Image 1 (tube, helix red, strand yellow):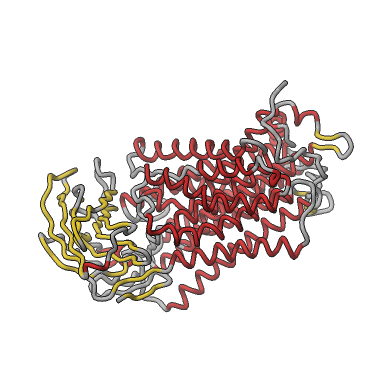
Image 2 (cartoon, helix red, strand yellow):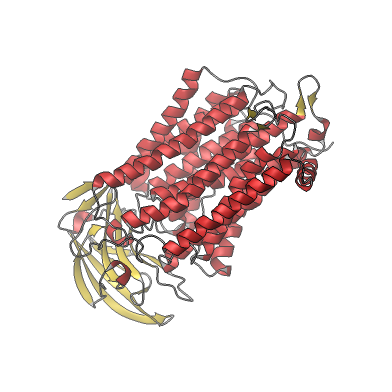
Length: 632
């Protein structure tokens, strides 16, 4: 009755997408835009090199004075302070552009190229300056060794390890832009956040936050004396210092949560059990590390910081820019679990604390998060999915929490476990993440199943034809009493009121029969699809699909009544994608991206171990029971 799929790639004769020509509307960007972006990148790179030359040959002094000013305000060396200040502004710019870009694609479909989308400018500027922030920390040190973990480039030039990692993560993300264009020319427009090159863009930016934490740590080590304790400047503003460090982990929480954005908009394209797994992975790592490295209340502060940034961004993109609105995971349940477990003696044993707190996040914490999901998300978690959810969240929570404990241990000054142990921790975490991702990507498509739809006219909105639907599924036993969703998705159509996205969760009226709770558009450029997700079943049928000359697709009309096959929904949601290529080519290209990602993870691990080796014991007073400091 079902066909099992591990990756999205089901063909259907009636709705198969035509292969796109390189550079066509459904393929990559126009070559003039590609050349323009490459030229801009070259000019910026040359400008950065020239700035480095002027500073290091002492032809300019303003850059050093600016770094010293930033250092005086943040109690850090200038080579750490100025890049961190620049990083904060640039990552917020990139994040705003990213959320805006996702909402534009959801509401309006594909764009004509990277320079035709206003959100891309924010992303590009943000990623360029992310790389520049890392490079700046390497340029600034003059006749000094910036921290004990500094790397020697020339006889007199040392650079901080954290700076190299930030620049590397930024470069990794930037490389994703030209590779994304190549990807689209080969495989068409995969309109999903989980396209491999899209993961490079968001993964590089998200993981750069670990480099930021390491750079800040290097700066604090440099401010400390081996015999006299922390530099007096470090204790001038303890509350500000605590908030800055807590904000860094709030930023890390945001960075790790970007993989969930499709769920935040209600256009998820994979199993719903993915969402709790992603929430647990991000929450367990960021919040366990925050509590161990910053102190009491840090996990709650990180959650509050992330929520404020996410809400401001959502308000800008939604009501102000007029694009589809998004909600976001709160992580409050996870933070409370971490803070409560930290009150026990386990907090003194970082690895054990990480594992137990991760287990708590993957069970009690994710249950607490489900209350928020039920309240604000389009698709709440069903009772039938909880067993499969725990099979995903428990191993991910334990292993990411354990890795967070290892990260905190590395920067505590107490030394690291034996290499075999720490390598095993990282490898087991990667295996847990890889296994659960593979499980989430596996789905089933029913064979010889159909949906009969009867449409009724409703009042037009924004000039679009609107309809309600009565749906009958055959066979009627295809959908259980508690599916993840039976819904109608209409997107990529624009509109002043509808804003390019309408999702209607259908009401069950009997076995295999459903009806609308709101009207949906079936006109203009809208793509309106009936979607079913029940367990591993992910299937869909088109209700209305506008003609698309760019990819050679004909219109699927919304007739008053019709019966259509239930097919793999990926062929409808990613209509512009080109499936006319060898399977090995897609697998090989995805493998290249995976290898690059693993190299970035290895680099961050290497940098952590290097900095750990020079962190003096207790020099930074890094105690899990540290309270929020006061000025008295």
